[in-house]
Image (cartoon, one colour):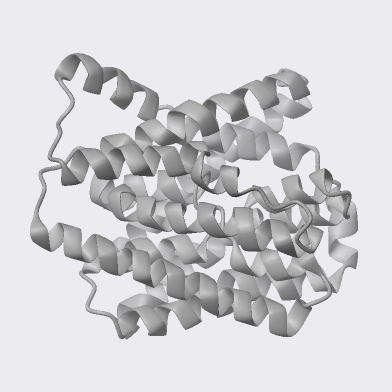
Length: 301
């Protein structure tokens, strides 16, 4: 119950930052070039720093074993979601992948960091690694029928590289000296405000008027934000996970549609407007659904 309250408070704080990003974009203080530059900084520098900083902990065999379980849990969550997406929306790549891929970077990492601390981000990094591997294989395949696959991007993207460096430091018991760790921590501290401002800027460009006319947006959103997290909740309950690992995976699975879906829709010439609306309505709805999922889990765990 206390954790659910913490999630509510943190989601509200994040929403305030999202609204700030929305407002400054509407006031034309944040243009497309600025958004692109901030996105590059966030993805290429800030997120890897968050992950590397999270792995700067003392090696423990028990922690390493639980990390492997988190990897397994993340794989199971994605496989189940892929199966549901294929079953319900086989001919609609935007809808099928929206069910699978959550905003585990922009939305989840700030939330994990605030609610569960560095340990939450530590476990979240495992989920991000699985996300990156699948979104650049299954995700691209769904959008292109196999024509746009890039194995290079599976292994050489900022998220995967950050996880690889962090894992190496953790298992080899390498601790960064203060003169290097402090800059990493400063950059990691930018994650929440920059990610939320960018989400607000993204929402500012969405035409919300037409959202209320499309019932499918809400059906897909309910699947992504409620049905899949509830399934994940019961699947994870069967695994011997500690409380922090369990909640990390649950929060990650409960986050809204990944912005990568809108990016893929634009890149592969599909309906970017619909994909953007799906990301937008999911982000708004998640303000209520993430705390709800965490609250429900207190009765299931």
